[in-house]
Image 1 (tube, rainbow, N blue to C red):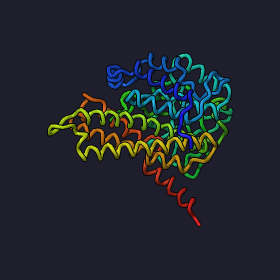
Image 2 (cartoon, rainbow, N blue to C red; image 1 turned 120 degrees about the vertical axis):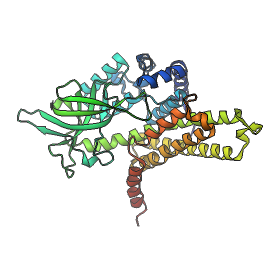
Image 3 (cartoon, one colour; image 1 turned 180 degrees about the vertical axis):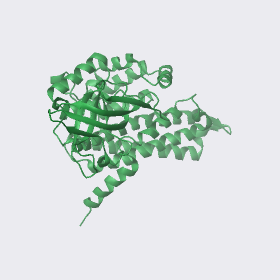
Image 4 (cartoon, helix red, strand yellow; image 1 turned 60 degrees about the vertical axis):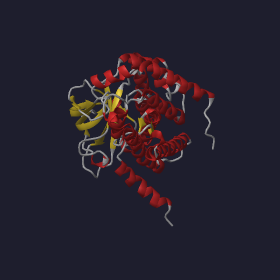
Length: 384
């Protein structure tokens, strides 16, 4: 096992750190959380630095990168910025488009990104009655006599759904019943008749707007389809495996930032005449925080390496999401407790990180559904 980084990876991480130091000042971050958005300047600078093109094929103007390298970039991006933002979403959506889309769809997404610095599309997957239970989706397309399709239904927790001009929707083919597992992916422009949205208001992640999205007989054509008909559920599951790993990379960066802040504060904060880092209870917290960060980091990069080598990760991605997002949130919780009362104010960033990380436990599948997925795989693995 080789844990060393290549020269190219080291240079990439140094560039990410310099980018964050320049653009993610504390005053800018506070403004982002108040205005619930991110300045165009940051999105454009991220694009110009080439970070948003990582992992996209060269023939479309991208920069080839394996998933381990993408994970390293995402982790450092969130550690160095110390806030929850949306910069790597282009990498996530483009992985779907590049793998499953047509050349025309891929080029359209790349061109739009290069023009604005923002991803072209959001991902509309969850529904009010179908979060972890994807088979209960009721959003449906029905084929018409003229060869078009009518899309009807509702999606929720659509990240950046109101901000981005397109969305990728997963919908059942013809029949909304739970027994129907035939689903397709569609890439559609949000300004089509029948598409509407409503904002969702969250406890954390204040600079990433979420929304509900409604489809009332939206007309689709075959040109809007992403991937093969009826193959949407399989593509969705593949997307989730990568999304879970990238989400843990994000969570890991934030947890590392929380750990570093808490350890520095423990060395400076005096109580009973000495730094609180000298007290056993603080030392136990710092020890547990470091263990959970190191364990998650090892699990994350093993899973990303497996993805790069076409090794099935259904089990390991679920274990990673279950353990990583939960235990890293606990790192932030222990960091907040080290700060004490000041940590529960807006004077320091740990409270913001803590609230943001709690939300990441839901994305890509809850801890409970990860246990359901992983438990079945563990039983099969050790069956005799």
